[in-house]
Image 1 (tube, rainbow, N blue to C red):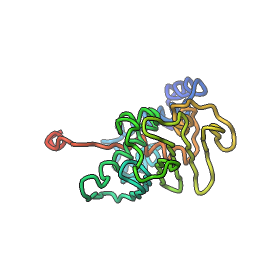
Image 2: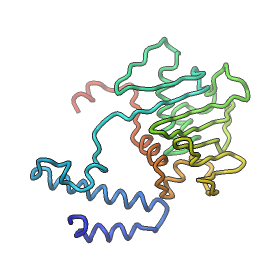
Image 3: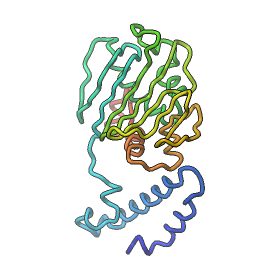
Image 4: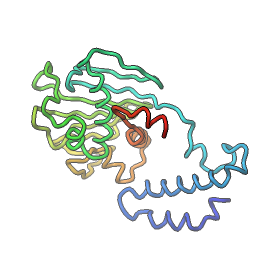
Length: 241
């Protein structure tokens, strides 16, 4: 009833609907904000919030660390690393073993999604020089593979020192089904249909901006958008603030 009576919400959603790329996400965000307002209104009045607040289960899931597995191949000192973190994990190793590179790989994925692969490599790794593992063969590729919830996003970077192809090999599968693939020759195909994409933008971000709501796309993109890597924290400020 609350949702049905809120005419302003539907006016807002109707204004977004079909207006431009990403309109479905804008509608979703409007519903999220509406739900959050209901949470605030009901906070003092409702004891069992989970059963009384609209959209609670979808918009405010229980807080838990996402379970994912990260595979890194041929990035700096990491020839082939598999990172399957628990809610709290500790990385131990000698200087130069690749601890920081492993965390940088997470940061690289986040920024590659947001800003494109070239810009992410520039910001996180300082450029392509020295990016590829020195023990790898000339035809080996740099590969980042993220798996979670039955979905797997793979980003391959055919890189030499000082250069990187404009379009990378990129795939997303969901329980073995190919959702999209992208390569320099055939371009981007989403569920078998060609899709126009900018060279500097990942296929995943391209489809999110188009408003595609396939579960695998949302699952991986949500993880990337929530991911944060902090370096050399000011522990005193973190504790006090």
